[in-house]
Length: 336
Image (cartoon, rainbow, N blue to C red):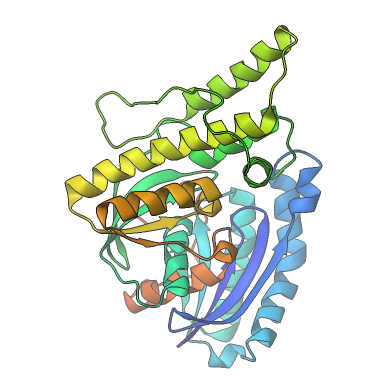
């Protein structure tokens, strides 16, 4: 069963054809990173316009690379939430038009469910149930994946997402966009014990996260050094901050998995590419004998392969949408 998927939730225009939810036939991504780098982050209006310009060519290339025609598709899947609303609408409306013109079923897919599905591509043996930590620029949450389409959130950030904190810390250190990625590259050899950061806790909710205080702490560290004409060692500061974020994620994940009796952990989202987090999660799982599934680095960021994979399971579960389908900037993963 071949499914064409379209992804346009942020600044990547992507399309892919995947067979039976696991076999990648094509994977096309048009990135806007270089353009947004000028502004130090994604400009939503520019992102929407670039999606509109690129989407037709990206979809055509995905079909050509897969040597597949519209007639050979079983369905068309599209990311409809969450994300930048203008960017999402480009993909949703294109997918609706394509589904209407071809007579193929339209399958709406939640973006975060797709990130979890990236590991189905990387690991053919992976099947629910399992525990998942979703970490990205806009979301941080711990999820019980009970079936391919049944999710329960047991903890989430109360303020900033982990990826947002990493990006803003990198920007404060003078690193270019994308901040989190450049922070990881620059600080690989930094001393992660050089700077001390607080361990955030959320009163009354043992599994929720908070990264706002960590972000403020690193910014204050930089400002205080400047006011005193002191020097900041960026590799050491970056390494220390990444370690603090990773420690926060690992401690809560460890506690939740032990309480919920899970022995399989999946890491998902853009921040799952962070080298510190991957290493720390490997050590955590080795300590307890947990099985760890990490997505391939090429599938950590936004792409349509993961949308097609999740779309396959949504299709099997009977999920369909008509021309009334709308995009949503925010939507709980359990409702998606």
